[in-house]
Amino acid sequence: MKEKKIYLTEQEIPNSWYNMKADLPKQLPPMIMADTLQPPAIEMLERLFAKPLIEQELSTSRYIEIPEEVKKLYSMYRPSPLIRANFLEEKLGLKSKLYFKNEGVSPSGSHKSNSAIPQAYYNKLIGTKRITTETGAGQWGSALSMACKVFDIECVVYMVKVSYNQKPYRKILMETYGATVYPSPSEHTSAGRAILAKFPDTSGSLAMAISEAIEDTLQDEHSRYALGSVLSHVVLHQTIIGQEAKKQFELINEYPDIVVGCIGGGSSLTGMAFPFVQDKLTKGKDVRIVSVEPKACPKFTRGIYAYDFGDASNMTPLIPMYTLGNGFSPSSIHAGGLRYHGGNAELSLLIKEGIVEAHALGQKEVFAAAVLFAQTEGIIPAPESAHAIAQAIVEAQNADAEGKPKTILFNLTGHGHFDMSAYDNYLSGEMQDIVPTDDEINESLKTIPKAPDISKY
Image 1 (cartoon, rainbow, N blue to C red):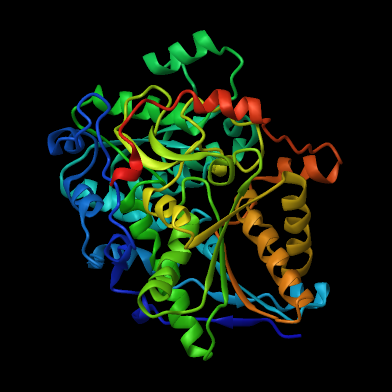
Image 2: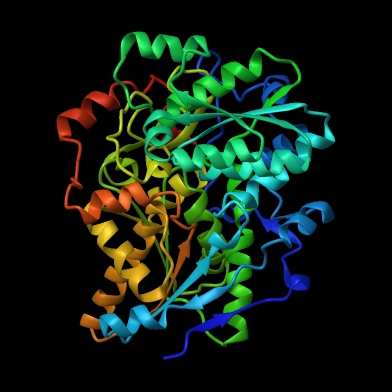
């Protein structure tokens, strides 16, 4: 069976990003400061982010134009191909159709370049000399390291310690692009030192790494901070994925019944799904949006919808989101990019309203799907992406069992070439499924600060 790949031309790269805020069914609760319970001052945000990114963060305009210089850099790997997973379908005997958007074709190996490039570009415009960031599995750190080198900006990355140790080649990739990489928590910041003093054996978390990166930024007036997920301007940039996918489906006169994506902070699922959510809300399209997270870090399936800090040291504004509490300590699963206690505000609202579904899978089930995908489609997926593959297979098999085959689209966020220790762990039979108990989650939820009832907004 011949593999079907659907390509667009370089000239068909979308000219604008899509802003989900314009079409939300309810007003999005604002970010607020823990001390004043008011939105953060613009001056405070400008100390952390480039002004154009703040404007995007706060914008409710439906479309925001992509600068020509950003489009030029996008053209290194965009438009990315939409691929019919014929060989996987044949192996499983499916009647449902499986399509995936292959974001692993970017130079850094994942979808993260879609936001890293514009964030570096806008920082260059305001004269930023140095950008600090965090990274979980390393895809974001790799993408930002590359983008910073293009724009001649120094890049400092705080990499979650468990991934720093599990994925040494990802660290080397960042260093090859010119970045400085610290394992987080580190001795380099007071936040890191405080965490190590309290939890000397911690494997780290994205919340801890965010605290370190923010502190580092605030100590250098020429530095700005960049975030790889969660915030509105990040998911805005990622919507280029779903917009391209819609164009590609038009070329073959099809439309997905189900759109699937993995969720850590939210950039993967939102990037693919938000343009289809727009169709669902404004055009009445009958499309299911399905998110999937690891059972080891189940904020959308077992957390609560509340205001919470985005970092471990309470340095950020309070964000309206599904959360397990910023004190949640996730187990050392191999999908490092999904080990975050909370999620994007727009996505959280859509899940709260029942417009997006939330599911969770165990690590061994995810890697079984990853190996099957590699053996049929020839691509070794990142552990994060493998969650979407596993859920897409579940959706296809369920649809076939009901006698109602579906067309299913999922986001293959990146390749897993630097995740071979994870595959070794699975293939050797040593991989374990670690699921937090109710008591552990309830204890973590106690770290959520007292704040206004989010439902009042």
